[in-house]
Length: 311
Image (cartoon, rainbow, N blue to C red):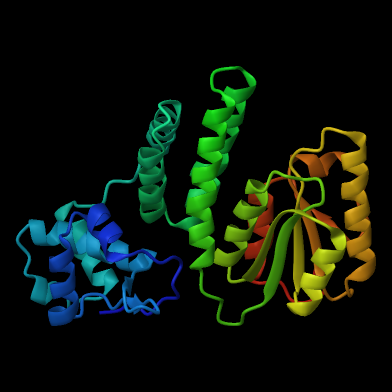
């Protein structure tokens, strides 16, 4: 039985089996024989599951382990399954975010990139993309930066951590489907800004909120951002500015925003955020965010913003 909800992320069957504790073959049988979930298919025919599929499978397994028949459970909707769980006093265990952060940092400290990526990938399954960004990855990146600044970790550790975060979040962003009424948001950093994770986090939040995100990555000249927005029919442009240590970099960022403000139609929302954005002068039309939560609140105020809305 499909939940009928829009996909929020897509996971292959092996990852779902690992997370739910249900063998791959059992998942296939539950789909084929009982229609418990109905995953989409990749271009090559592989099964692709969303967060709702994973949650449904995890809840059904709790009940099957208590003796409920899968044939009867498959006929129930999610609300009925949850009611059975509530009556039985069962509930999936919520992940411990502090523990996840500690285990990820320990894996990075040991330069065990495979383990660190497994931890973050499983967290994506458990938490969903939005919670992953706001509750786990953003605090995690702050912790990693503090450890590097205090000498508790080296450059190699920071690079391993950021590469893994980039890989996992980039994969999640690439598999987000467009919203029911897709609108394009161009996301990137200005020329001179090499730190891209803030832009990637913002892009993933926008995609989860229903935007069709055109992610440009770091160090993009203003003219290229303008061209991408025009060619992509963008309704919004989001610029991330994290670290601008030199005056010339700040001037470049200010010049980029000024060029965008002048070159973009008034119907295109222009927003900026990140630690570096708070210390520069921006044109009046730019909506400046204090952090990812502020940006997320704006995204979710009314769904994807109508053209021309910048505040």
